[in-house]
Image 1 (tube, rainbow, N blue to C red):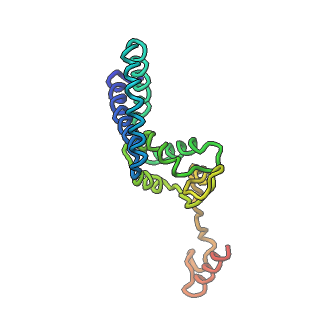
Image 2: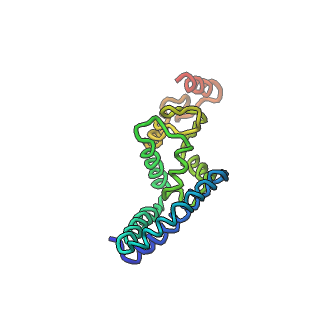
Image 3: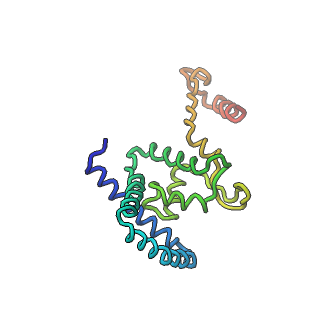
Length: 199
């Protein structure tokens, strides 16, 4: 059970993450026209919302605060210290976003990941590097639903990343030529190479 201090710290951390997400949503990187449209829409929507809260402060203010704190609580979840655990959780999170589809395009994945705890301190460039470091295969052109020709990640690749790695085969010393398991200087090594190639 989290203490009051831990709860407050997590909500504070999550509030900072949410604030950065709002900033990214209003000013998407490299899209100035979209940024102007979104900022304009925010300027139109915010004053009526503020007036509504001002007229019914006892109902809407606690409701808005509760929604914000709940979102901040989820956004402020501490990252696991084990890198492998972090990697597996990231893969599972992307799999949830994929759902029953064969994959997901990066144009959909990036905004959703940046709005999640995994992308809290990342931009699109660093997010792509994070996915690559985690072993994600990014296909340059794939089809998802009615949309094709966009870069994305396939569900089959994600499922393969979650499967345990096969154990490497241990060579059998008795199969080598020569005394005490050693190969003979000439023909033994060549035969071993030939067997390895045809196996």
